[in-house]
Image (tube, rainbow, N blue to C red; front, side, top):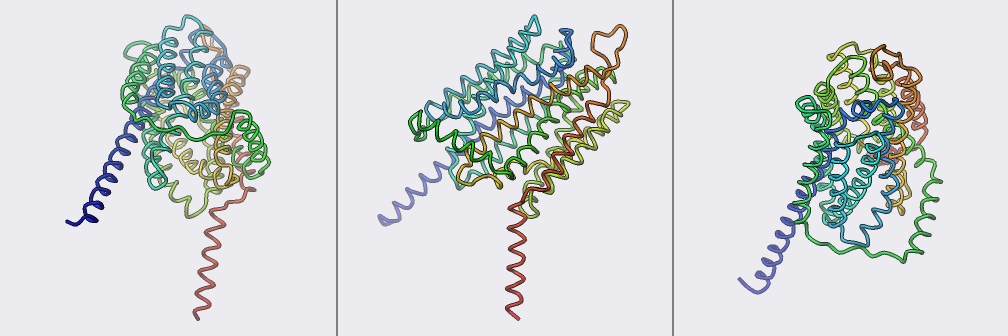
Length: 437
């Protein structure tokens, strides 16, 4: 073997070693993200009922769910800036620590106020961990493998959210309604161990604080003047509004108070919805590359409106499970929403666009439980002898459906860059065929 062959062999070995190291790191991040989402989803079937046990209104039940997103929305951008200037691994560990502390605090909460504070601390931990982990993953992956690694990461995130509700419901039924919070603390705490083994990576270059703030504010204003971006993010707002307002608030309350189901059944219903979401979301991502993204998203919004109105007419466990399975499959059509927001954003300001996209998503996360919880309060049918505010009526579901219809119809006025690009390719191909004759 000559010198050149030896050098090439050495480089191939280094390349293979780097790829192996990348894979291990991505699997590490994905596994921890799975644990975090598993824990977060474990408390979803019992959280409305747990908040209700403090004898508060449906509006305040909704605020317990929204409070998580309040601090997350506030800290999303600061967390990103911190991850540029400081050790991302330490920020992730801090985020996991806050999640563990908040979960134990929520499990032992003696009052409603303590529960809200615990949820807000959890939101802060989520912002620190998820933002830093996403930046870490983007940096470690490189451009060539970024799509593959991000898909793996997102898949583990979805997997945790699918199976968490079932585990949480079973744990609550087997032990106590507070038990899922301690299980959440345990799995999040386990995530610290693999996070400690992550490699240290260099922080990205950044401008001085004053220049950076001015540039960020200017870019945010320019992005917000794009009508297409506003239409796409309004659709995002509506989707997150029903995700937390209908799926995470109204459905558990309706199942418990109107149908008398226990947490294990509620968790199972939410898991079924998660499975059907995954079943349609995965193929829809690649399909949208061919047919465009706007129309599937508009169809998702309009069909979600229909199933949202139908859900409160479920009269038993089987009917509610079937309706939530249909709901989940429809929501899966929204898989390309982030890609669509990217398509219609100013291409030289994607970082700012994605930051605003997350903030507007969290606004829907906050507004849904609060607004629909308030509507549930003023339209509930009181039940003598019960501690809850009453039976959930159909009106909150109708209100959610109206928002979805408005978002779906307005979205149809937005351009679809991918659809237009593919149409132009077909026209060019036809013209070439004509020229060949």
